[in-house]
Image (cartoon, rainbow, N blue to C red):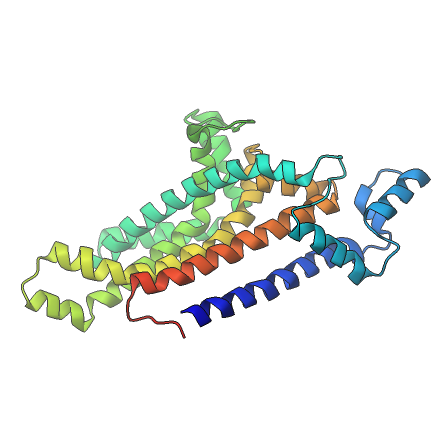
Length: 308
């Protein structure tokens, strides 16, 4: 277990440097004029050009520039946005909102996927199973750039069931509709994996043995089948964190939620390179840590799994 943990941490370090290097290179190095890329379409005076050149070490070779960025990142200095605000302060305000939205979306999607997936797996071929499969196909076919404004129009503006926009300090109720939209990105896949896993485990030898011993059907499904069926679903939830973060860019932009996705979208629109690189770098760290935690949960869920 210890060797596995050390190996995974080393892989995380390599992945982190590789991902941040690619993002940094795509943002700055490939631009014909990095300073113009920094300020977008606005004109650049000589004083501003000299100040930006000194701040971002643009006179140095690219690898040296990247080293200065990584050095600042590792010491907690994420630099400043082109608006002059510290990126670390912007993150401190944005992350709580995005974490709240992501947690609500995960709870909603996991609850729906597990309940509907287990019922579909137990009642394969029934009306409920067929309707569920059709609904998952519809959800999978709808991209979030269509689903988010459509949900806002129908449930937020026409029916008035939810606030159409979340605002600066969104409540849990104001985040429900965006969370439903965000959760739709992953709920269909989680439901199908749960259904397939439950159906496979119901045919396993240990389930037949449990039934032959006279255990109640509720205990066989609730203890034996569900526990083993959760392993691939939890793996999927860990991978889904990345999908939720990318989906949050669209969802937070549509519903005006001042989270990480909203700031990242604004940075892309205004070509604010330091803001984009800073937020993406932290997202990479979050994604790597979540996947490590999910991998370590394997052993807790299935004692047969041992890491070497």
